Length: 234
Image (cartoon, rainbow, N blue to C red; front, side, top):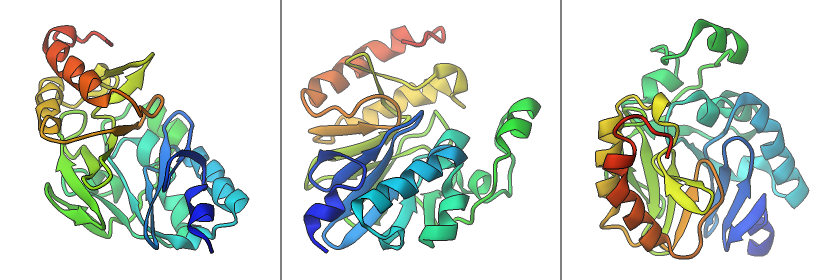
């Protein structure tokens, strides 16, 4: 199977990265012969992911690992369902693993829990800051959740930013401050992105950013402390 076919799973963003958009973006990331799925979305989002692989003529079984940026249900709700087809092990940060595997209940109202019916999924690998997953480096950026991480490819200067940084109307922002476990910590975690050279930012919400990422990140880091101090949505 050609590299071109594999790169076209979902909507192409850059070479080797496809996107399945929805309330949350899921990304299919390819490095050489290895394919990774980053964030699974809600349970209903599993179906568009399966369809994207089918439309591209790529077996879902080619996914080597499902990488979760954090435990929120809109990012991991489909993971258990994808396991039935992909059989790919799930990885997330050690601090969020109990919420993904069902050993701890994520903060969620009774009505949301009843409506969404989160299904636990086994975590095969509990990640820590600085771990490597193929060419990706795990950067722990807590605040939105205790185990929020971003995945960084230093060779290609790609950043899968989850909810640490999202895109909104051409600008970068924090994701829904009211859902942050620790908003002050989420703001401080932005500083962890400063040393990274990023040319393509792939957020959990909003559009991928392929131009001017460094300036947009610098702008967010500068204005975040005052903009979000009182819970503003940015």
